[in-house]
Image 1 (cartoon, rainbow, N blue to C red):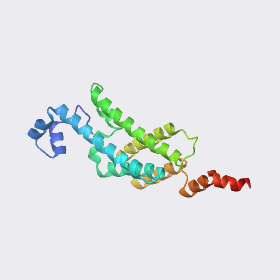
Image 2: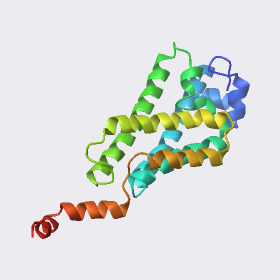
Image 3: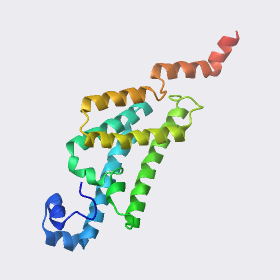
Image 4: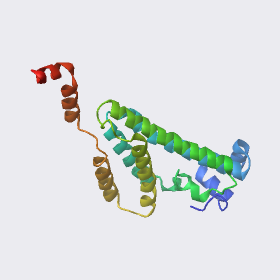
Length: 196
């Protein structure tokens, strides 16, 4: 992880698996090539995070799968770590304002996706009505970012998966059985039975 200023053309051609002429023809200068690479990494990683949020059957599974996929991605694709949502804040110089703004917006977009999924969990009775969805979404995104550094530190995956399990268990998600019981208690038919 060399940072924006220290990445060479040789590094870029090696990472892209193509020659310098093709890169220059497609993207332009060294800095333009690097910007395109970072944008590609950020877009790819955002898609991988969005998928479990959109396809998991429950909010609990959505958050767990998102965090677990983050760990798997970092371990199987360590070369991408220079482009991560979290790490890029340290490797991209402040003067690259447009790129910083792009990545900040990518992070905000993912945080909003998490919030949307948690709001759905509240509406479906999987989370209690009084929960602060914004704070909970921010917490989940903070843990997602922190996992990146733990992978870079060489933390054993088994320990991280166990930590994810403990974290998700502490978010207050109700089981499907509990959700059904709660809905039955709140239904008009059930309330009539209780009144009798």
